[in-house]
Length: 559
Image (cartoon, rainbow, N blue to C red; front, side, top):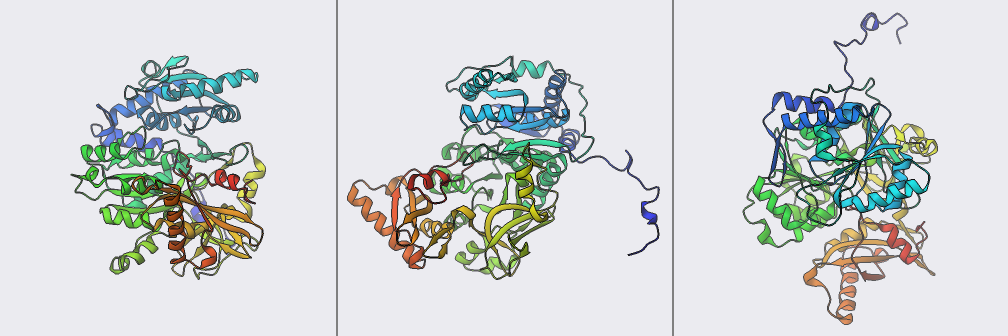
């Protein structure tokens, strides 16, 4: 290493002319400056341009700033995929405050915990969720805590139950904001921009803190990884509260795209909006795509262009990837977690895969893939030695990330933060293998591995086999205690409506048929010993709630 002074560091310092902290605020301003009249938002009959969205975001930011909301403050929202949710993603960073997007399916006790733990000063809540929010606020008062200032939203597209609550009405609150409010860029791009609570299957959830730099980089990485064109028409099937919509509110600003809002996932609604607005892109968990595949073919009438779908949230079954191909829709498989801003790796397609038989293409596209270009590293390690496992597609280890698209840490939880970053990597808790080409393939969550007679069984592998049966809509495989083997696989299966058994005899026959079907695809010891027919429980983001199923059968990993 040279010992003399580095001339490239002398008198060549950062200054306002050559360095500005990275922040998604700049992307919103760019869209409004360059494409002011392009349509930014569609919601029912409502249409807003990027100029209007930027103006309203400045007003919302100004209204919050007038309440002395700024750096270090948290603003919580309980909103569906509607224009106010998009505006919150743009306005909150303008004030330097932190956006806390709350899962709208949580109960009042959990919402109260999040509001208290995050010290949220303001809560913006849609009328649909006013009952849960009101109960959560009452719990805060009962605990002697001061509740946040509440801004109520009454979406004209919502006709369901609930009364608007709050100290202010959203539209009036926005109208009262300063239209000339100047965005306050962060002093440091490492400053927090978002707080997203994990879904925590046991105990209280952890608050994942993400920063302006990571949000900006992942917003751009989405463009690059998906080859997203200028002006896409994007349908919001993915909840925006989940990892800030995988950073897509900011991604769409970077390409001046159009957001088609959607309050709930419904196949008929989705196909109708795709047809009406010529939707080009959408994202979602495997269950969303599987729902569309299983829908009546008549619903797809008139959609004669290739819609591009991004799938993540859980390891997609091979049948889902194959089904999307047969529909003529182009699926891109990504992988990530809340702690890495949503997707931070992609199954980058290789040209030579096109010549492979369908089954082999599906197998390759089912892998979690390689790191995003703006993420530094993704690999699989032995968690004890911290060394990369052999690239043999067989040796299992823990999937880890490193780079700028990784969270700051967990709010007020130093121990969990240090454990997550042990050895200079972010530990996902997911188990996987490395293939010879460097692509990662998930095998399971550590707690979902079934150990039967000393043999490790991947529940994902068993689920993949089940999904190949035409009667299966959704499934989940968990460990069932067994006196002889320790554990054996138990399959919970949700059957497609047209294949639902009508009698106990028919149910038993189908269960036997599914077990035999698995035996045709797997080693016998990996196959379920029992099949139970249920509505498979999922989170609002489409992840199967296996902890509920493990608790039901008293698995060793139920806690």
